[in-house]
Image 1 (cartoon, helix red, strand yellow):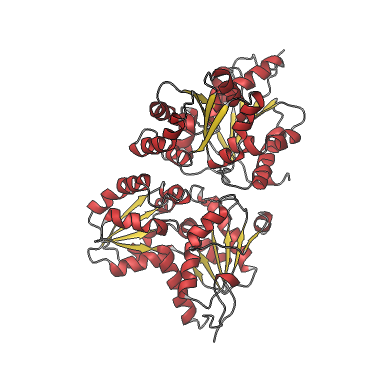
Image 2 (image 1 turned 135 degrees about the vertical axis):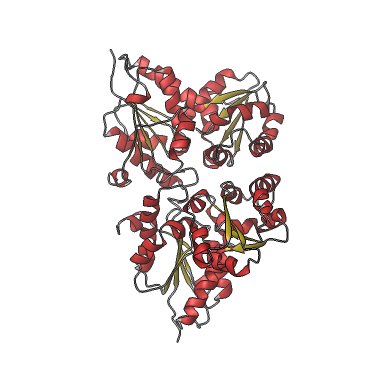
Length: 276
Length: 276
């Protein structure tokens, strides 16, 4: 058994390409239909109501195109609207980026102290803490918003003195709490992995939510006998839709995906909004 | 002669409230109809096409409500789409935030060396340099994008070590060029005025584009005999529309306007998009 249909995946912008990158790594036979809502990103600072509306519009657009699974590669939508999106998507599995990272951290912590970093919006929802406590209520969690990390990544300041100062300022308190696992709860943060690791020291394990979401997607497809076994998956046969082609687009896409991306298609914002 | 109608004003978000603040200061009889497109902000990183579409939608919404003047309090729209907006708005004057600041700098520079700082999008358009050279082609301009300033302001880090480090990193080269005027070409930057001034030193005059836009609006209304002379203008009688009420909304609005804002009305995004 094998299902040749693509995996649908959306994010408010391009950060979700870090999830796509992990999907291609751990499932080389798969193709992806990616949607980045670059005309309306970032979602993080918006109201819950608006996040739900935008998330449902993104999901519907992808579901209309016959996908076998939907990955919500956006921490904001995964945190506040995953159930809403699931209700839109009846027949296929929906994977968010919050639960997989939380589960991986719970399995790894020995001190039962887990830190979580993310955007202000993700942290405000408490989604990672809730996911952790649903598995093990005895774990102590320390969640912290690091709102400068996203603009620092988008500026390409992956290893600058400003980034190191910001990382130290954000993370010193978390380290002092004695955590042994730190969840990177934002798709942009894997690009700061080295700066963050050198700031917190080698004794703290970093858990990249993009990586764990891709692995969970693989496990589900395997269990459903839906993994694509055909040759010729990967990014070249995948499709990448965006709602706006912005000037820094190509540079950021390459940064998140690990190498340049040529097969990008712009769709009109009306193609998302018409369906609601 | 006096025109009691309000002044319409829009920005992608709340930064334009720094312009509203200056309007209330220099025209105490005026009321304002403010629109902040908080469901789709920031516009800065988007394509020119999308900026034009969003800007025209914002302008139309305000013009439908019988305003006597339109202030485009958004540097991005002022830089790339002011003529488009003017074409939408036939009968009333349209004031952007670029030309007034540029004119003020040209009048003040003695060394004929002017610096401009703004978002990446504003700087990329070259709008301030063009406005300066239209008046005096002999002036040398140095334009620089400072993309971390907006997130730093929105985080309330107005006077932190990170902000000072970022300011120093951005501005040291500009100072070395020998400029004597520096245009703050972003509505967020007035909040960093003290940090920027202490970074560049007292020999460089800072020109706040919000302030000069408000003064130009006053001069035009005065010349048209359209200044409102009635008592009871000001923010309490003004109306503030937004397309999304976000969690950090109230805090940011107070920061930009200088004191808390209570009379805010949320409109649906469809009220903007339906008109095109």
